[in-house]
Length: 173
Image 1 (cartoon, rainbow, N blue to C red):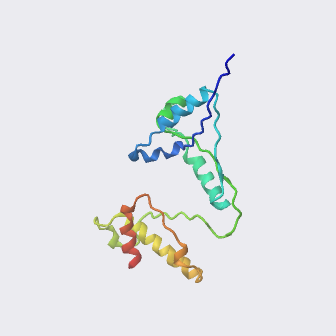
Image 2: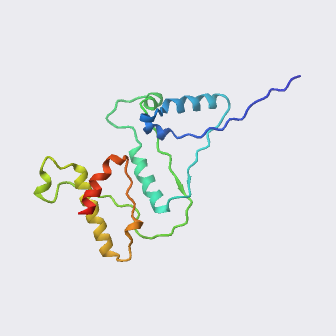
Image 3: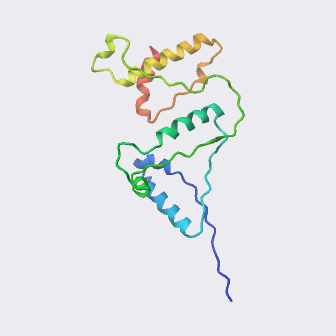
């Protein structure tokens, strides 16, 4: 009698990475591969332990994404498969594993409802300039509150480098 040989296959992927569609990422590939592997006896092993971020940050994002990653109420009732085809990915909470080091606020949400001065109502101003101005003002106030704060300990994350010049101009001013 001949023994059946099986191969081990280990695949790592993240359905949420389909945001990189401009690079050819397609959530359908992940979904179909997952379906094929599960049908063949495979099993998913979610990697939700986070050793990089501090616990308050993980708590904030778990709270936020639990609400953001919800199918819209104004969409008619769709099956789970139809929702998945639209690219919806359910929230998968992270578990913080890093030791808490800093008790200060780790997340701030700055919302500008209207410009502070009439100058910024001119049509040639971009909303990113207003955002940069608000952020620069907040950094200045943080520095006043804590003179030991180093500017080098502040990081700005951008979706694309095309927006950086707005911030560079405002920060230089």
